[in-house]
Image 1 (tube, rainbow, N blue to C red):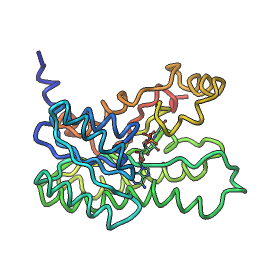
Image 2 (image 1 turned 60 degrees about the vertical axis):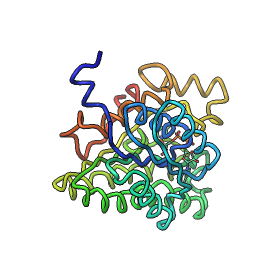
Image 3 (image 1 turned 90 degrees about the vertical axis):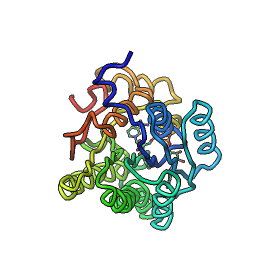
Length: 258
Ligand SMILES: NC(=O)c1ccc[n+]([C@@H]2O[C@H](COP(=O)([O-])OP(=O)(O)OC[C@H]3O[C@@H](n4cnc5c(N)ncnc54)[C@H](O)[C@@H]3O)[C@@H](O)[C@H]2O)c1
């Protein structure tokens, strides 16, 4: 039996665009949003895995479409937003999640090329998505956008200056957009996950010592699963979060509380 509170976290009839929806946190969020009643546009570079996510949603009785998208390319982002509205007739929500982690290189050795690559995907990508999604949502009379920052959006970590800078920037984009458009019916928020068990961290977590150290850095004592982040995103996209705007919400097992 559902409670009235749970009913508010339903996403029935909503059309939601998810970048980086072919893997990790984006995939878990696509599956959860579809299970809560949304139609989902999976926008990603990875066609094969993206098609698998769509097939899984359809097997479970949901509705989803894949669109090949590089979030760093404005024409691709424009086309992805247009594909969502063409497929579902509207765009109510977006999870701007695609991102890469450039790390392991000391600051004095990081090339300008690597620096620009991280900026293009993690920061410009989020800006382009917000820009084109807003145009459609304002025309619809409202919507909700969630940008995926990171705990690295508020604290530094060594050997990851590009990642940390871009994630601080994602929170800046979120606050600036919320300040500008909350009065127009669009809520813009950010999430700040701690370590999540996804392909992004696979390589780093291969060593048992590193895995243990990362888990121990979170007061809760473990690394999280993608579905735990997805729950917060689905809530932020739903009417249950109707007065939440401009927030940067930690989902980090206490990592940034230390
Ligand atoms: N995994 C973590 O511990 C963690 C923690 C905090 C924040 N995050 C953030 O969460 C987001 C998702 O991370 P994840 O761990 O699920 O990563 P992941 O590598 O598992 O999945 C990322 C997805 O994004 C896609 N992608 C990459 N570049 C793209 C581009 N230019 N255009 C479109 N799609 C692109 C990839 O193909 C992939 O499907 C990232 O922004 C990441 O910074 C992750």
